[in-house]
Length: 398
Ligand code: LMR
Image (cartoon, rainbow, N blue to C red; front, side):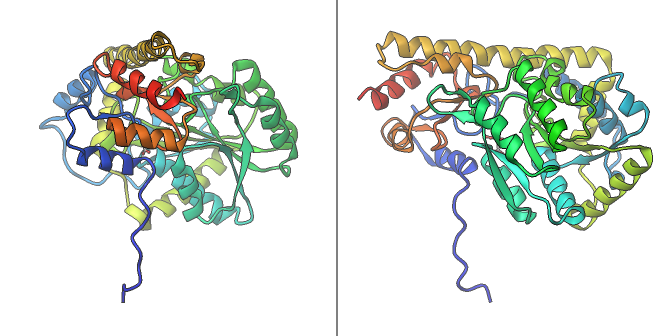
């Protein structure tokens, strides 16, 4: 009965990892997936995570978490996103559930949107993380796009972005990247966020923040929550997807949080119960281990400050690699401007390379990255940066 099923197309990001793993060249470089590596190109387990795991060992039973997930993990996640002393947390106005990392949080929200606002649409930036399109597509929420990136300046197309916000029907849903925009590495400035928030207020739009990289933009998770805090100050109701994949290196643990700020505590209880209802037939309740790791780290002041130091360390190594990549390209006499490598922030550099140039990097130099020209700076090291710069120069010079 399954005849006629065609193989699914390769995932534009995770498919790159598959191709990298199959390559036997000793020179191969993976700057595809957004996963942090140390300067030897090795995956990193943070010391705060190791310590949390030592504390868990032997003390954990394997019982189900509640349908909404770990209460402690959710409480700590809300403090990170909404602020340690947020009135909204105290007033219990936020409906929040543990989610299967950022993807799971976005998907749960998209399903919630479809169930309770079946006629609504979602405005998605151009470009965005490829999976955003899949998530809202599979939730059957119609998608519209809004301008974001300006290919010539390799920065923000603020004027067109504002026009699109103004021209969208009142009360539209917008997906916003809270910080360290993926794939462009281009974020609005604080002033621009204020203008965006103001215009959202005028139009009655609903902002849904995907905050997959809190800590990776500035090195400080508190500072990276600025956009959300501006919207909160302005009195918006918001949604927020949080992930601990990147900032705690808990990629495969699939731990995150979905929150929706509601009008009052009664509404928050109702919304939370509906989110749980959506989760129950999909996966019943979320996994326990990663949630325990997160809550142990965030509840212990010493472990939390170790975590903050380690996040800053990861962000700093990436910033160092941005400078090194740009300097190497300039030393090679590249006729192009590579200023955007150091202007953009977070885990990615949106290089401006064409899909054909990326294909040459892969076929001739065994360098693996997504065909939209995105370089995961987390995969760049002092050992491969010169090789990478040389290859980029070769494919872009003529
Ligand atoms: C990425 O953009 O590379 C990451 O968010 C990993 C993923 O799941 O796509």
